[in-house]
Length: 124
Image 1 (cartoon, helix red, strand yellow):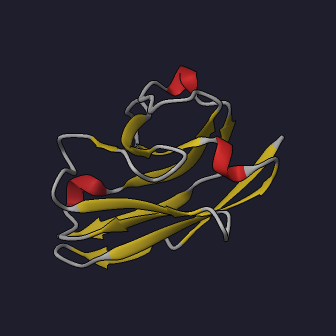
Image 2 (cartoon, rainbow, N blue to C red):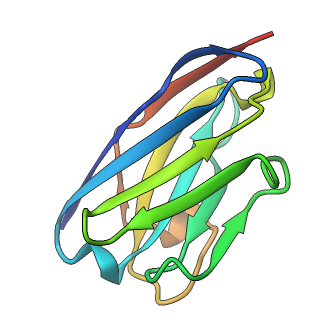
Image 3 (cartoon, rainbow, N blue to C red):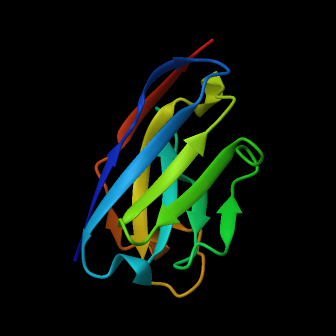
């Protein structure tokens, strides 16, 4: 079992930056592929970024590529999402997730554990 707790969300203006954090506890964190998803009101939950267990490989959705950076610190059981040049379209609840898969996956169905989410609101 893995417990995930997100933090770092908030209300910001367009162009601002935020860093989301996800603290993991439970089973060996470094064994998991980690992902960040988001869900805007009335929309499906979608992948934002994912990172391999070693941190050596990453994936980004096209909508955030070049603006967001995912990273992890296995020694601290933490995964981060640095969000730069935020846009109103980035407004959503952001979720951290962990997957048993051995390589990066981007489907919700491939993730086994989820956090409760943190709100990000970007005003224009």
